[in-house]
Image 1 (spheres, rainbow over the protein chains, first blue to last red):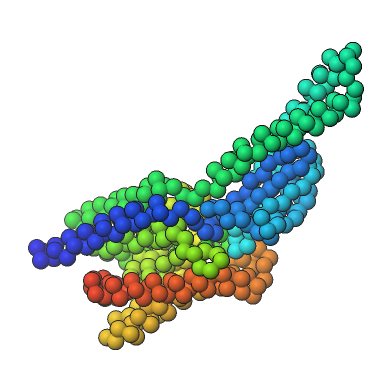
Image 2: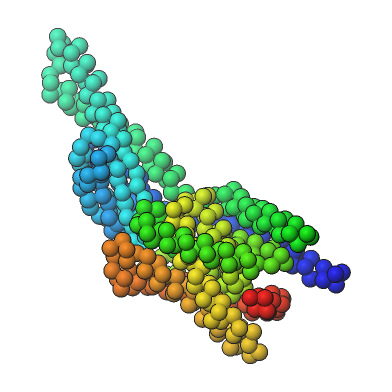
Length: 204
Length: 204
């Protein structure tokens, strides 16, 4: 038995070194390829923009995009361009389920809630309307108001663009080191428990 | 190698799950007490390796290592791959819970076949022959996984030949890379822990 122990100990040391090596190496590797496809969609004006990408940020090109309403009826379909993007005019003011199918069995969906469109519609128009009412007596012309609305829209789009980009980028992040090390921990723990039960059977 | 949820139909998912359950049962039965730590390490390697992106030309690939798992672990590759795939699904949303069975089977079945095809051969006295067989093992495991994946996709309406062509071409760099990695792993194990490879075949 004593003779038996020695190689097993060195095996244990090898394991530890291997696991540590992997754990140290991993932070240098941040990108992942084609495990999963992500979809993200956002609304600008009356258009919905869809973007498909893999973890790590690689674009999902020429992927099928299908848009469904809550009843499950397909409203439209299309394919993403070279940048992994696809856009369409809002076909119905309901919740839209956007399903993206990439090659090799990768698929994911994203739901754009109907409230997104209402906000887009009501936000710029209602202040403009109240402004219009209060401005009725003054010298403002309707032409100025629609111009103003357009300006607000453009300004909002411009101000929000970095925020939307930030959201898109955050969603592109691959697995984090915490998750990876946690996963390895789970594996060792799981096999440890398995070993415990096996050892109880053995000692019986 | 990870099929997303919602791509496959229920019969394919159930068949995959049943085959995986059977494979895991055999694997657990054949897993000796002494072998458990080894299974745990290779499971960790499998879990981590698909997160490491290797750039090949314009695109990037990742290793799978199912050939190596089959070669070293034999039937224990089934529970090892199941645990790896399950954790990748839970932590990174690769694949998914419903496709767990199918995804495990796609990667584990070729591992077992490799074990039977090349398992005895790698103990060959001539190290050149052993290395060539190890390369073939890594290569063949991925090729077979791609074909199994294509087979699963038939039921989604894609034609087998087309799906197989796309998948095999996409995985060609992985096959070569995997072959090389398995060959080097084997050479390393032969020098450092030759009993690791021999023991499997005595028991299995």
